[in-house]
Amino acid sequence: MSAATWMAGSGPAGISARAWLAVLLLAVAALFPGITAIPVMDRDEGRYLQASKQMLETGDYVDIRLQDEPRYGYPVGTYWVKAGSAALFGGTAAPAWAYRLPSFVAGLAAVLGTAWLGARIGGPAAGVGAGLLLAVSLVVAVESRVGRSDALLLATVVVTQAALWRITKLTAERPAFWGAPALFWAAHGVGIMVKGPIITLVVALTIAALCLWNRDRSLLRRLRILPGLAMTAAIVLPWLLAISVRVGPAYLQEALGSSMMGKVAKGDRAHGAPPGYHLVALFVAFWPGALLAGAAAALAWTRRREADIRFLVCWLVPTFLVFEAVATKLPHYTMPTYPALAILAGLVLATGFRPEGRWRWAHWVVVGLFVFVTIALSLVPLVGSILYSGMSSLPEFIQGNDTGPHSGDLTFGIAIYAALVGLIALGFGFRVLDKMSIKRVTLFTVSVSVFYAINFQALFPRLEDLWPSRTLERIVDSLNGCEVKSIAITGYAEPSAVFYLGTDTELGEPRYALDLLRRDPACGIAVTTEADRQTFLAAASALGAEVREVGWFSAFNYTRGKRVQMTIYVSKSSRLHRN
Image 1 (cartoon, rainbow, N blue to C red):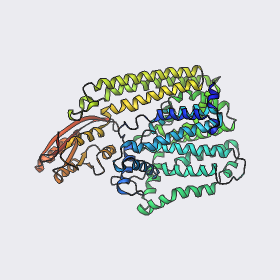
Image 2: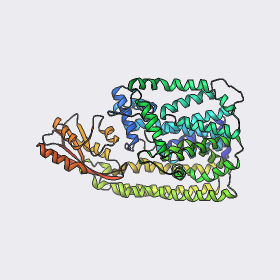
Image 3: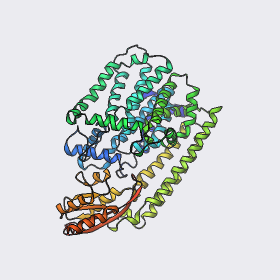
Image 4: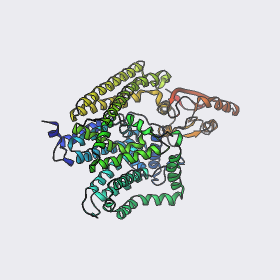
């Protein structure tokens, strides 16, 4: 049976049930491993998880808080979804993976939606190829594993753009407000609830570019804008009014002022970069599909007069250029454009397209970049295992079966295996270049999925140096004698620590940590970094407060790019002790 026969069928978009199952299973293999193993990551994931956890603790689903601080950068949709997921798996005691599940499901939805649209545009082979390439793209693999909002945004963008494409095919001048128009505006409203007007930017630029390129404004009438805006308002306004009644203009000032407009003119929180950043980042963020990026660009140019190709170009290029112009840049910002790029790459696979003429050199430059990035990514596990396994810095009393004397050897062995699989993926990439086929790209993406599984599930969670908050939680849990422990940390204010240790964890100056020990001498715990330790001890001596050290460890705070050493103290009269 040929690949074309195997993929074609009576399922959605003409893809057979077997092909849909293959795409789904590979997407699960590419996106799920590591979700239950990777510790909470700082800082955005920690903030989302802790704020969602506090909604469950307080029962307040209107105001978004991280401890006592408002968190008004984006709307409430992501917090609702993650709090709802956690409520199903333990509520306030739910582990981190419960908050990550919505991102995973959203990643699957984006992959399947991309496959559907790719198949409608270029046939089953193009749809399957597009779905597989999006599933293994590095940025989607990361965002589908973490409890942030970007995978949810991607899913709503794919649904909205798929509905928009369907609207471009309608013949009625003003179609009934159901089906594609209703789906378009409903997904748009949900996208706004997830991450504000980012989805509006993507779809508005697509629509404007299509109308200008085609010199035809009939699409605007087919969109049914007035009832569509009413539907969007029905989704967004209830919470927006509720939060405005609760806190006045504070939310809108933060969301539209500091969070959104503050990122346009200058780099927010040291994330500024010049134009061209996203083009360079694409070769990492869209790896390994970036292998076909040059050929996809050549195909788009060659077939630019076709309506469907124009749609994909209008989805991809204007949004990409706007994010290049914005001062604040992070690799995942352009992720909403990657489904369009994946579909173009899927068309390359389905048609066996080969760049010719002036595009040929660009294609081989892209291939060279792919080789460089693949080798670099293959070396990351080895470098990480050497620099961040951190076994010698862990106190003996928290070392369990996974951190025994031979753990470092095991970690390095896993890293070698991961590096070898990365190089095997490189070999499969060359096979795809030799012959464009779905069979070969499937083997290619399977090898990448194995690479991800080894790294995210087996290796990265073992790199103890990278997870200071988890190590701190282990030490605190190892102290017996009190049912409830009060904790204060000085010099280390990562939200992951609050998620692990509890919402009441105090973050502040050395004197606040000392005050906690004086208020709760029996069950209080003070944690100081090396920079604050002498100040803490001097203040304790001046006040006649006797403290004793119960543990210490050294780790790497990757959000600040420097090592941190933390020492754990209790009062001399504390009931807390180690077994």
